[in-house]
Image (cartoon, rainbow, N blue to C red):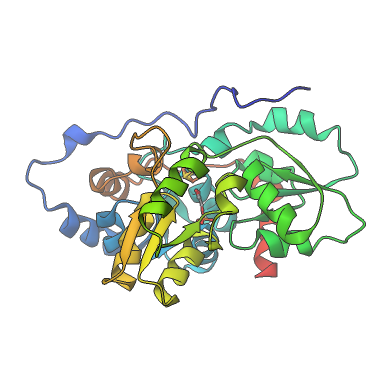
Length: 331
Ligand code: 13P
Ligand code: SF4
């Protein structure tokens, strides 16, 4: 079976159009969200790529791993997940008795959407003896076909946990896969997926920026192409990048990941110069179009109407749970 990047994106979830017109003009959205959060016994979880006003309202802001850890342990009755679909779906996998809502059901992810479960299952038939390590940026169906899940912050640890004599398939991000191969020395078969945001950063544009800011440290997410990661002073998940900026002695950083992370970085290092890496085309492509579908209006509606709600069939959920739990057990 031949694979390329032109898969038609699968819809992230069931059709749901947020009824924005039903919002009373002049409503104090922040106050209403706070009121509904306590009335619904809800917790608001937000990824670092969310708009600043959502991050500021959230009970917890984190990277994919931290958010799934929070989802697994919360005692809230409702999880309002401000992130993308696979993240909210992971929360549902871990907390089936809770209602999990997402402000915009169309908030997908190019990695997850371009790895449809049926095509992945077909592709895997070529590797019947391989262990399947899947990046959390995938659907519940793909998780259910996996041995173990990883995030960008624990991918090296997860791969190192697999017995050296075992062969490994890694999906769906080929860049993260290559980076993990380099860190671990393990050979892996890679599904050819990529993130449309991180793929926009090129060594050429970043080298030009570095020439202008020779004192700046380059930090990059492992979803970037290897030519970018190789140039970086530090490579890590969003939480690791944030931590690096908070603690490093440098006062200037070129940040090669989605620009939403800058909000927390500015709070941790108010005096530091934070330079977002430019996308290759000069467009606004360093903003994830899926993450940015969520906004305060839609979060308010999600808490008011308790929809759109993430639903999963129990068989898929149970099969997806095991590899997610294996990951969480590794820390
Ligand atoms: P993190 O694992 O750093 O949260 O990244 C998730 C993601 O979607 C990056 O694009
Ligand atoms: Fe997916 Fe890339 Fe957006 Fe992350 S930044 S959610 S990997 S499309």
